[in-house]
Amino acid sequence: MKTAIIMGSTSDLAKVEPAVEILKKYGVEVNVRCLSAHRAHAGLSRFMEEINRDGTEVVITAAGMAAALPGVVASQTVLPVIGVPLSGSVLDGMDALMSIVQMPSGIPVATVAINGSKNAAYLALQIMAVKHDEIRQKLIEERKDMEEAAMKANEEVIARFR
Image 1 (cartoon, rainbow, N blue to C red):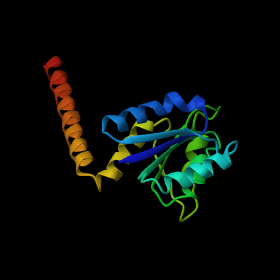
Image 2: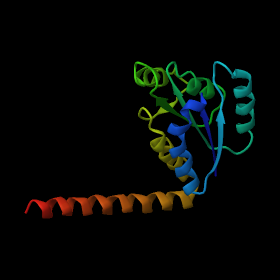
Image 3: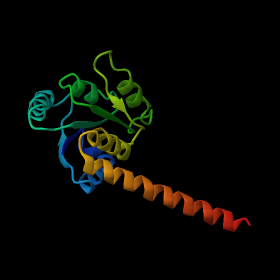
Image 4: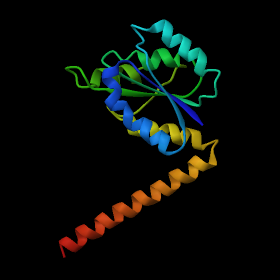
């Protein structure tokens, strides 16, 4: 069970770390890189060659502004690619969101919310759960825990306003 997370800049690290933590909590190996599509394209291509051969199952990419990284990554693999648009410009991530969701036909990038690395991790886990029963079971258990917490909160609201 292996994923790769690629960010375009070290300034993105704090927004990507929650995804790394979630994936590791599920026992998934996480290969993290900082490789700009614009400033480190040769290194990015070498890394893509590596992960296309090493058993990586899903790639999470995080980028802001022009957000070329997810598309460049998707153009070099048939692995599922998840794009995380990041805020950081005067457009507060809308520029990155629009860039990532407007991929040409045949080169898709699944896209989560701006700064949504947690959901990127959960989507990667759901993709891997098709093949890995242990991930599927942990996801089901976590969803049950979420439901229980939500129902407890509901009971507290009811009790408060009785």
